[in-house]
Length: 246
Image (cartoon, rainbow, N blue to C red; front, side):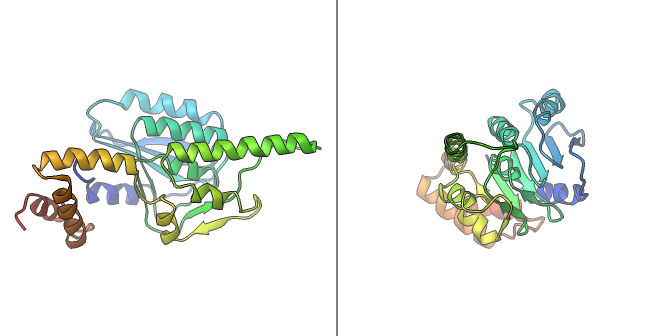
C-alpha cells in the first residue's frame, strides 16, 4: 500500500468546515474510490445503525480511501466504542479538521482509524461517566467504576493505543477537560498510523519495491524527511526515493 495522497487529505479537510450542534452523519461525493463520512454532533445510541445504513451501500473493494471526519463533543460511550470497532473492521482512517474538535467519547472513535490525522490541538479527554441519577451504593459504584475502567483499557488495547492514554484519561475528573497538545497526542499514539497496520504495510511495500525491510525503512525515512508532504509533488518525490532514483 502506498502512502495516502496529501491532496485528498487536504481537500477533505477543507470540505468539512462547518460546526453543527445537531448530530449529523453524511457522505461526500460520488467517487467510487472514496468513502468520506462526516460525523458531527453528539454521539447517540441510534447513530450506529444510521451509520451502517448510510455507508454500507457505498462499500466495495474499489474503495481505495475510507475517511471518517469527526467534529463532536462526545456522547454515549458504548455507542462510540461500537462505531470505533465497526470502522476499524472496515479499515477507515480518521481525521479532525482545523475548525473542529474531538472531545470525550469522540476520542474513542478517532482512535479507531488506521491513519489518524489532525492539524491542531483539538483533542480533549476526561474520565467517562454514567448517565444515571439518584443514590448508588458503595458496592454498586465500585463495581460500575471497575467495569468501566476495564472496558476503556480493553478498547484502547484493541486499537493498539498505549496504556498511557487511558491512564491519563481516567485521572481527569468528568467535569473537566484536558486538551492534548499535538505532541501529547503523538506520544499517546493518537496521531499517525496504527502500528499493526504499519507493520503490514512495511512488509508489503518492501516486497513491492524489491527491498529488504531495513532498506525499505531507510528509504522511507529519507523520503519522509526530504519530501514536502503538502507539496503536489510529494508522490513523485516519494516514489523517486523509494525506487532509488534520488
